[in-house]
Image 1 (cartoon, rainbow, N blue to C red):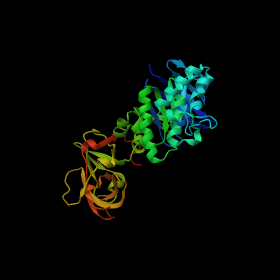
Image 2: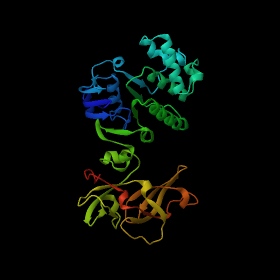
Image 3: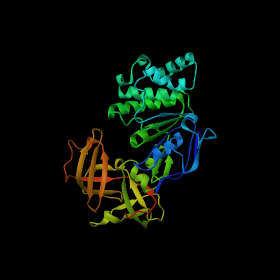
Image 4: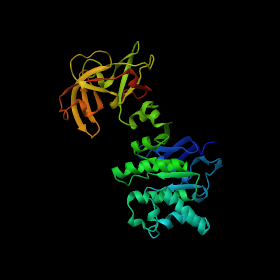
Length: 363
C-alpha cells in the first residue's frame, strides 16, 4: 500500500484549470519532489494534500484513509512552510512543543519528545533561544523539528530552502536528506530548484500546465525524458529535429540545416521514425578543431559565447553546417576562456542521443 494515493485530482479557480486529473502514488518512506515552472500546479497539489484547499474533483488517500474532506489538523500531516512560520514570542523549545501541547500530551512526554527532536536536528543547546536569535538554517531546523514532533505519517515541505543563501542551501540539503532518512518518514517537497530536487529525491513528479508530465527517478528524468517539455525543463538540452535516412543515420532538419550542409546523426534508437533528439551539453566531447571531422557524430564550428562557472566551461558553438549547440566541458582544454571565433570540434556517442516523441519537432 502506498503512503499517499492521489486519484484523479482536479482543481479549478473559476475559468482557470490549475490541476487536471492528476493520479499519483507515493511510497512509504519515499522522498518525493513536485517540480515544475511557476503556475504549473505543484503548490496547489501540495495544498490539497495538506488540506488547505479542496479538490474540485478526485480524492487523496493517506495510509489507506480517505482524507479528502478532512481539515488539516485531522490529516496526521506535518508541514514546513517557506517562511518557516515560527512563533516569534515562543523560544525554540516551546515552538517544537506547540503541536504536542495542542494534542494535550503530558508535560513529561512533551519534554522527552522535544529533547529527542532537538537532538535529531542538532539544536539541543539552543532550546531557550528566541527565533530572532537564530540563523536561517537554524530556523529551518526548528521548523522541521516542530513538524516531526507530532509523529505525522507524512511530512510536507513547501520550498523549504528558498530563503537561504547558496552555501547554506547546499549544507541544508544534506541535512534535510539525513533527517528524512533517519526518521524514515514519507516526505513530499515542492520546489522550483531543479538541482535541489535532483539531489534530494528518490523520485520526482514533473508538473506542467496542470498535468503530471512524468514521474521517475532523477536519473530517469534526466536521461530518459518522456516528452519535449520534460527534456527542456530538466537540465540544459540541445533539441535536434531529424529525418530518418535508414541504417540508424538521421539528417537534422529545421534551423540546423538552414546554412548549408545538414548535420548528420547516428543513433541506435528511433527505428524508422523521424524523431526529435535530445543531446545534453555535458555529453558533448570538446576538442580543438583540426579539420579531420569524420563520422556522423562529429562536427566543427566556432565559439560564439563562453562563460566560466568555476567547475565547467559553458560554450555556445555555431556549427559549420548550420545551427548551434550548447556545450558544457571541463576547463582543461583551454588555458583561458576561449574568445568568440575560436574553432572547436564537437563529437558524441550514439548512446548520448535520447529520442523524444516527434510532435512539436519543428518548433
